[in-house]
Amino acid sequence: MKKSQIGQVGEQIASEYLSKKNYTLVQQNYRTRHGEIDLIFTHPSGHWVFIEVKHYQPTNWVHPLETITSHKINSFIKTAMLFLSTQKPPHRDSQFDLISIQNNRVHHHYENIISPYST
Image: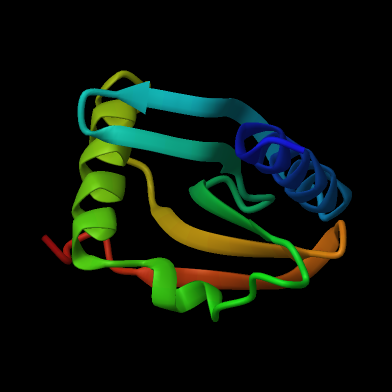
């Protein structure tokens, strides 16, 4: 399976997982010149949730939080801010989460992995 296909499968698994927890999918693969956000949901309480999905094969495991570099954080925040600027109301609470997928299931959902004011 190609890397892009593995990513798509992981995003689908994460999306189904969050939907079962009453999150609402807003957009998948939101791209800007700054980067991409895999999934954008609204939390059951109403705030935005920006999701990075990491899908690992059993032979290629690193801790998911190790993949979140300062460059990734900056890209993630700038992309989220551009998304938020297009929404009404534009300023609503938000959080940045990471979901790791292993063996085609959610391995862990890391909530609030970065502050939106980290840049």
